[in-house]
Length: 495
Image 1 (cartoon, helix red, strand yellow):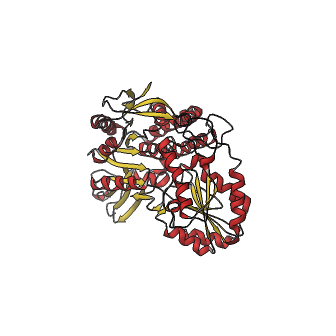
Image 2 (cartoon, rainbow, N blue to C red):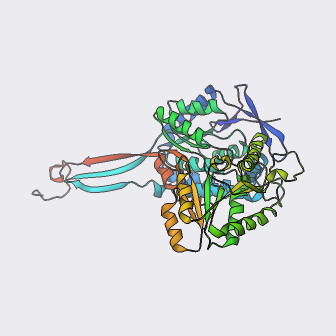
């Protein structure tokens, strides 16, 4: 059985804790590897490596850091197919979803390649007579990241490139469910020429996370995952005087007005709800159908769902793969029955899909006449289940979003510019799409929700990432009057 190690000081290190967990191919249900789970001592070793490296790395020139980051970017581009294959093998993503994830990871590395621009400070001459004041941004020290199973290649690249470009050293704790892609990317990072200790990877579970949250030498921690864990990470890290950004769950709404293009809206709902098997925090999980658009919209979505090909991600014909574990699949399936029992109409039942293998597959589901009191509406399902809520007016739709506990993303589909502009103001969410179902910002903006979708100091990646991984230092300087200087500068004696 393949053994997946840690990466410390640019070397693979076998686990010594004696604790392991299986890694599966979710498309077949077969175990493919054994993952070492770090002990507290192993986490301490990784942090010590990062701390030792920080003293020199933080003083490496911006020019050198930029060159290394470009080399890293090129290696990731050259190995994109291999990274995508590892995503498919352990997460189950189909080829197009895996390739898209790698492309977004590269986009974030490319943003970090421009660190010379991002780290520019500010300067005021003569703030007072003979006094100059300027601000520079300095790195924090050792920082850490805990990343989720649903985007094991992209989310680490939301963190590592910016943190390292700013002069920090990094300890990454990837998901134990699909660790091979992030470990391979870390290997490319080392190959690019970054010194030992700048990036370390520890495999692990809650023991590793808690140690990072409590370690006195870890200055900041970034997290992406479910809302309960994000809240725990934020509260624990903050109590230990760390800078924390913790992104949680979501229940993203897509409002469709009566004037919307039905074909565009239906295509968008299907791709946004069922892409990556619905296992993404920006998936559309609720379509809010306003007025008489509901019936034709539901019909159009149903037609498209029936044409989806579900299967192993290695099959180029597959449009949706399996869920991450058997237990998660069964949990998602339970919401279909719960919705029906509560009064929702099951238009398409994913449990009835015929998929001839032993993988963790579930077909796509569509529930109509869902109401806000149902568990299928209230809970983050994180799977291929789409709910339709019918309302009479735009204002009812906006209120649904405002009343929801989460505020990650929201979208509206309409041809009316006035309604779209109003929605930009009314949507109570951190990321808003206008005729765009998944409004994930490009790498040179920043990602983050509101309410229970995010906890901490800042949103993640882009400009906010640079802000999170640095702190300002303000310098105020005064120099002697040139006329009184011991150095002859050629000034008149009465200057």
